[in-house]
Image 1 (cartoon, one colour):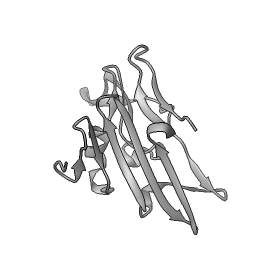
Image 2 (cartoon, rainbow, N blue to C red):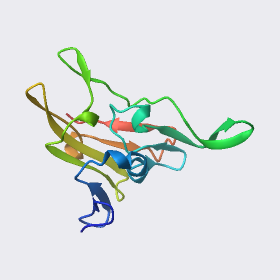
Image 3 (cartoon, rainbow, N blue to C red):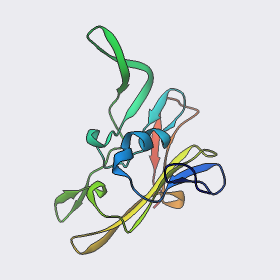
Image 4 (cartoon, rainbow, N blue to C red):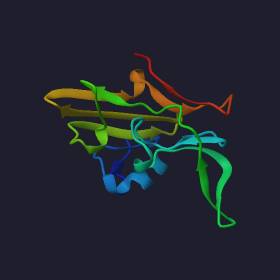
Amino acid sequence: MDLQNNLKTSTGWEIYEEEFAAGQLINRGSIFMVGNGYLGYQGTFAEWGKDQYQACIVSDTYDRTDGKWRELCNVPNGLSVRFFIERKEFSFFDREAEDYRRGIDLKTATYHRRFAAEIQGKKISAATENDSGQKFSCQEEIEISLGENNN
């Protein structure tokens, strides 16, 4: 079923997009955020950085500027990765996607993404989905946010 702003759902439990919209980075990162009430992780690609609003956030911890509380603080990101092909770093952010899906499953509280593109004449793909892995925040140990890879 189509929702607003190119978002979709099949079961009502998940929300996903199948077209990447660079102008929606902040909005989509928040929609696809996983958290447990203590620790939250923006729904961004693991190889993205601060320019794409990647964030790992601890609740009730705010930046203070000019004597005013501003926004939630980012903490060190233990799930960040960097991709290299033939010693040259790249990100899927500035690539045309051949296969793309990003979303959150509200029933299992997991984030997933799939992306494929041609880079330097080679088809490259990355996924954190279903049996390939997922990103989630632990309910038993609230200080833990994990990325799981089963491959």
